[in-house]
Image (cartoon, rainbow over all chains, first blue to last red; front, side, top):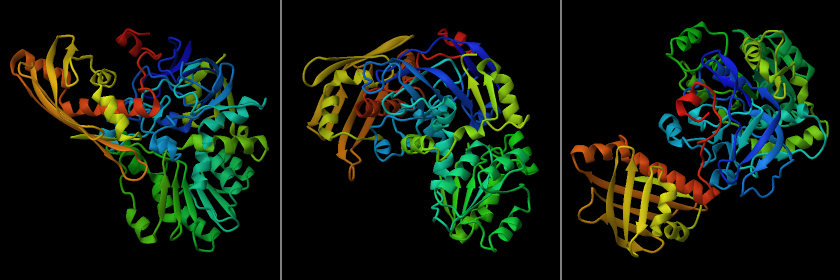
Amino acid sequence: MKAAVWMGKKKMEVQTVADPSILNPRDCIVKVTATAICGSDVHLYNGLVPTLEKGDILGHEFMGEVVEVGSAVKTTRVGDRVVVPFTIACGACSHCVRTEWSCCDNTNPNAHVAEALIGYSPAGLFGFSHMSGGYAGGQAEYVRVPFADVGPIKIESDIPDEKVLFLSDVFPTGYMAAENCNIVPGRSVVAVWGCGPVGQFAIRSAFLLGAAKVIAIDSIPERRALAEKAGATAIPSGDDVMETLKAMTGGRGPDAAIDAVGMEAHGSTYDDVKQALKLETDRPFALRQAMRCVRKAGTLSVPGVYAGFLDNVPFGTVMNKGVTIRTGQTHVQRYLHPLLELVEKKKIDPACIITHRVPLSQAPEAYAMFADKTDGCIKVVLDPSR
Amino acid sequence: MRAVTIRRPAAELYAFWRDVENLQRVIKDPVSIIALSADESHWKVTAPTGSVEWDSLIINDEPGALIAWRSREGADVRNAGSVRFVAAPGDEGTEVTVALEYDPLGGALGKLVAKLTGDDPGLQVYIALKRLKALLESGEIPTTEGQPVGEPQASAKGKK
């Protein structure tokens, strides 16, 4: 089959690889009908995530048709049309039972590697480095999906792929980010750093949860325009964001701040240099600014991905203002059914963020375009059949 | 000392471990375990460069709570260990704690044992405990062995 393979920093290839097969009794094989490039794929693409290896198949946003099931699969059936969460969860450990799906104890075969680096191992993830399990990703014609009865959600209606594909990651990720803000309907003001796909869904989710006002911060005009379409007030990023936010909130500051940027923020030469020299794993410009800008006793919600160690993080401001920080990989399985219902009731159209539809065979060019944010690119959907 | 918490009752975990041949499923290295009697078993761990063998004897057995063992005279690797099963707080399950001590010989056998156990024999114990937890909680042990992979890994692993 064809698959998009990472071949080193800023280098993707479409290769012909073996088809996947059932390896464990609760697996299924999905024939991928649509897959997307995620912002976190860009961190992988840029070589910033440890333990990714040349030859790894990327992709953790995908959906398709179940074509084979393992001997212990009970509810998922061949022919089912499913969207697959990027977080692989067993459904039986105490984290899964408490719906902390992205913290599943049992799906990372390399858990000891993650533990050596970060203390404990989160769940295995598709296409996301060997410390996250080393599972082959879904930017391919077929993909093996462990725990077929736990993760994949069956789509019963004939709703198009593009409207449900993002249940795999970015929609639940934006939604959980907004939910983590403790929004008080009609009162809360939420500031969102980053108007990429996760930021766009965070903005829309904040409104769905009743935010009085959403302020969106991004340096790219077309991303600000898409945020404004959702009802947000968009401002350019820069050093004067604090003053602008104070002016827009009667001096209080936003009740909640969402960092939907993560480890590759722009705006700080200090971080550019230190990351390039590998003296710092992450460029936390947006995080620092969000920490300073959020109001006293406010909430900082961090869906943005960070890999390791951050310099000059103003923790004193977090402590002295009494800021609550909420973060984590998304507990995708928790949100699948409620968010599918929102889509089916037309409360939100997730396809609104798609700017490019590209054959899988052109994945290398699509990665470069998305990473460099050229041609107005906000979200790329890949078609594995072409 | 290595520990995991498994969301299953102590009695079930004890019963799985007490039937020592079951441990072949959770120890990642190639291992053959044959029960010789209720309390005795023969162990053989194989590596490309050779193998080590010993007979193991259960010396303390508290149903649902503790199993302790030691190798018999003549073992390639003298070893002794124990596993304890203690109820965790609330509904967390059972805390499973393993202590293992071994006394490898020098020379070629010693080198072989070092190769089998890596720099950290405790890590091998821990990996086995994680696999035990996955098997008994979720019904299977997570793996990516045999999945598709691109070049250059495919050629390197000879499994494209």
